[in-house]
Image (tube, rainbow, N blue to C red; front, side, top):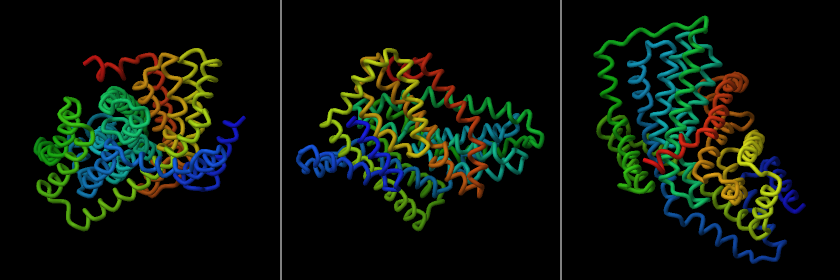
Length: 424
């Protein structure tokens, strides 16, 4: 009964428009006060949430992605990929997905990926006869690759919550990320084959291919260096983020010379704004998590699940349905910070690997990014494409179905997640 009242109170605050960070922290403080616990736990929780070496990677990765975004590398990546595959059936759609995947491996941000690639891809694809709703849906869904393909900010937060290896989580996202890219590409080729107004792109000359590839090469090398350094253990994710930020400054400031002081200032301010929002939510969730732990709510939920759900498949199905519902009115990071502490205690009893569950959770969070009414990627693509919410929402449904199908594939093929981090 207490658990139900707390959940009702939390969702009431969120539906009333209270910012997530303040709703979590305020409710946590109220619970501590009502339970007779010391309110000093609040500042202690706030300090401990910010005093974390791993979380330093969040602003650094955001700085890296914003510097590259302001430096226009999205245009260079898209032009290079388009020159090589644009003449294939559905070539522009393929180029868009591949560009999203490459930029995702650089930025770790779904919003940055959707905004960067969408700016250049939407006019190109609509000019070639791709239906507008398909284009908008493709970009919204393609942008979600930013939080699955490493480096991934939600995976960093998940690792902090569960105390799992960030490197293992990053590596576990590679296989599912490639699977999603492949499924998106397959659907795009099939769709383009039957689209009545589709116009194939002309084959680019070899000169154009090499010119665009050469311009995109520094950015691709930076992404490869950061990811391979993490994979080989040369540096931690936080060190990788710092190296990536410095590398981004060098690429766009020295090599490409597309970044000036006003753009750098805007990149820093945007990264700072996003970082503060993320850290406030993490701090609020820390206070709320401390309160519900003292009320033994995670333990009670774990006991309830163990008594009523005896199989891993049923547990995953229930969690997926709950996250789909929550995704209608909560943003991605809030879902993770609210649900993971509550659910993590039940994983080992059901034989579910926490790293696998992290990837599954991130994919379900991806679904939240493209489900109305609060899917952030929908608003980004709506703004970039100057579209209505109805156009974007209609276009994402096939891709949402593909993402849910990928969850089923991962459940029956767990090695796609676990092979790279634990068997290579």
